[in-house]
Amino acid sequence: MQAAIRPAKEKWHRPPEKPTAVTRRRCTSDKMEKLSLRRAPPRILALVGMALIGLTAGAGAFAQDLFIEPDLVIYGGNAAGPSNVTLGNWGGGICRESTKNTFGGGKSIEITPKGLYQGGRLDFAVPVDLMKWLGDPDAYLQLVTKFRETQGTYEAWTVGIMPSTWDTSGTGATGKPVKRMHVILSFSGGQATECQVDVNAFKLSPDGWMTVSLPLTALKGKLNLPAYKLTRLVITGDGSETFYIGEIRVMRDKTPLQADAGEEKEAGKNYTIVFHGSAKTGDSAVKYSWDFDNQNGIQEEAVGELVYHCYPKAGDFIATLTVYDIFGLKKPATSTVKVRVNE
Image 1 (cartoon, helix red, strand yellow):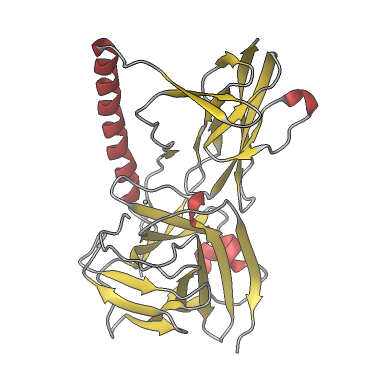
Image 2 (cartoon, helix red, strand yellow):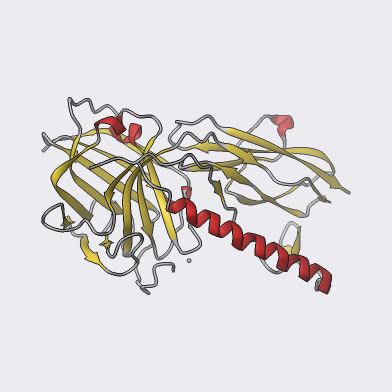
């Protein structure tokens, strides 16, 4: 297999779309009182229309990032077959070739898992040499994936060595949504390594594809081999819904994390304030952690790009957003925003 060097390109995580109805909520001891604002005048609606045009252009840029030329393509939508890759079930899972939800080629891999340890596998007749990539701290194994639904928390888990012995897919499939993916790499000689990651640490593109990126240094773990010839790749998920793999590739990424906590806030005490963060993360799986008052030290008081908080006392506060690489390979990024709370 030949490796192609991709051009350097920065990629921003797109924040969740804001709701069309603008509301305020007042915190009380027994309920949340919801106050709807009046209809926006035509001039404001025109400005909103212009903003939507801008979002559409941004969506196009996001889609282009999916199609950046990879350093190495392991599966490109046309590779499954006896001469290169053979697909098979893993445990009680189901794995087969499909013409649905194709990405760059004419086919995709359809996987219906039954938990984290039952899914699908790819067996390589000619082992894929990953030697140069597993020693590269900037190299990521990427699975371009389409799920029926994504949800979950921001966590990652890795193991060094194993013993040797929302509906976006268009399928209408049912089943328990996949919150976490599990990948196993087996090499010539029988040794293997594995990694799990929560899918909500990544972003959906406008057409429903998600690039699940796993740093190869994390996959390598404590494994120390004279050569890393990939003979089998196992892919599973912790749910039972069917998902599709459109491409499997290796990409390099040196993008440092950058965080943006958003605009300054002002509200009355006991009113709920919306904090809307964003980040430039490259290919990293990330976690958004919020602290709402730095006077008592930086603590994790909320997690997510879009979070809510109300202050019971009037005053000036500093809210801090910290964006973490959940694999710990990149330096965390912080951003602050001023908050004024009136009586």
